[in-house]
Image 1: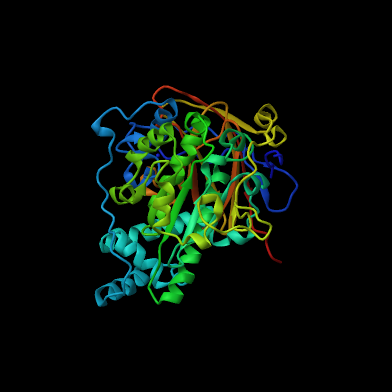
Image 2 (image 1 turned 120 degrees about the vertical axis):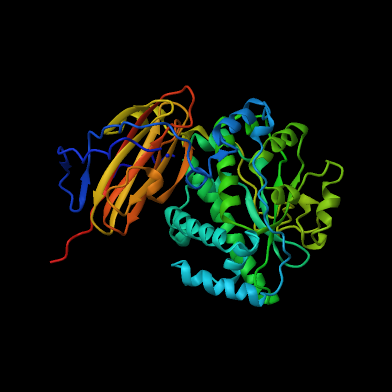
Length: 475
């Protein structure tokens, strides 16, 4: 399978046609590449259901559109842009009641694959969904699919791109009670340089990995307090923030996607979001994000003034155990006030030597098509059990949606009748190609979706490779 440079949803009138016969064998055991796929003709352009595109549609408007408004300095223009209130329970962390215990047992019965998750995990979902059992079960099911697609249970085996390790500032500290505080040094990040060097998907996964580590620390804390679960605090430090952070459309779209994925998959993980050292323009940009956030998340956010942020932070931390760089008294053994042993500050501007050569990347594809505005490009695959599908794609301009669906009946005529095995996500992929893979444990019919349905005017020139890694046959 090719790799990118190391430097670095709607129905159709008839089922898709069978795969073309010109399959090219590459002489490698268990690997076939399919070529010459046709764009499937679509029927009436019906809007996606909320379950199919929840990470990308806000009150019927594409997330990328609002992200562009943020990047352009424009506001959301009418009341229809505001999402319907999503009421997330803010029940304080407390013991599990008898009724909750019964619900947790029922969840384990109706949702498969929960053996490795403790009761605290399920309780956060149950309370986050206001104890609505059906909504909780559906949310947990989708989360398990999300975890598998992003391979979140094997993060220890993931080698994050070097540039993210070096140039993304983050780390963990603790509050007065010993609960974790995730520090995100967003202001010190060269967002333009970073997204010219790595996939937007990798930046999002890197951030999700930090959240997953925070959840682990919360579970460790819960083991000490005997609480069913604990929560953490998130601090965004916007010191050194520049206009690029809110004018770069690539970063705005990626950050919005990250926010949506967090909100959908990590209920009741946070108890506070503190944004410190935020200039006026950054405050305005954060205000533009409110259409994407639930009421309960918005209530957590506090953006104190330049004169008050240290005082506000002091409400939650003990200064003697807090780095001097953020108004505390702690330094590293060598006297460094930023305490890099605890928090990575990031190295600043990304060297151009890390940038992906876009012209070279665009030429390295077997298939090319145009996905017109309001249209989709669908690829049908029929695979054996435990086959791995891998992909790499890139557009000439802007973003495109991507998802993989499994048709357990083998004859579904609509994507909404299928199971999303790789949840829909929209990523900017004109600077750095997106690549990934998925293990198809079940045999049968899969459809890969490249989606430009959300676009009103812009056609997308798409280049891609799809590889099928079949399981080796035993003698």
